[in-house]
Length: 120
Image 1 (spheres, rainbow, N blue to C red):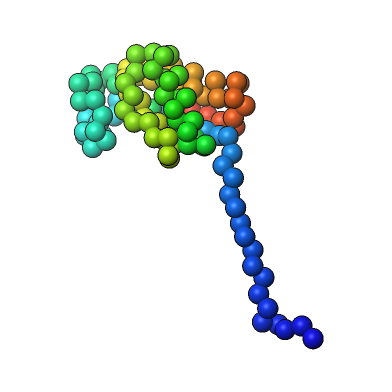
Image 2: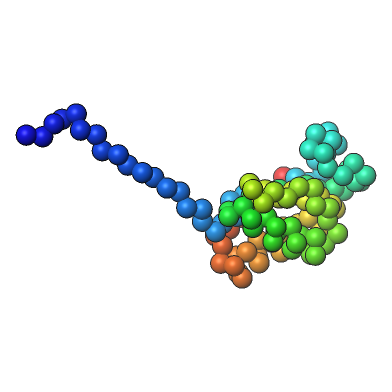
């Protein structure tokens, strides 16, 4: 006779996909954002931008940071290989160019699933 108090144990495991989950450009952010994030204070705030991305696996941020600094005149504000977060700053056109290069490379060469780059 079956006991109705038996429990089933389920083990769940998550496997990180190859994807860029977030890509956003902030055009002309307030100087206080730079200060609070500890980013380059020497930037010209009137024509500046901050680009932020998140990706999995998190080590992908190392590749993305290399692409960013080689694709334009951007400042690498933060790259974390443990969380997959990347923050770059620079002139708006340079940040847009770097973010586009990263997304295109990850989609076309590494076959990642990518999100669209949003901008405000």
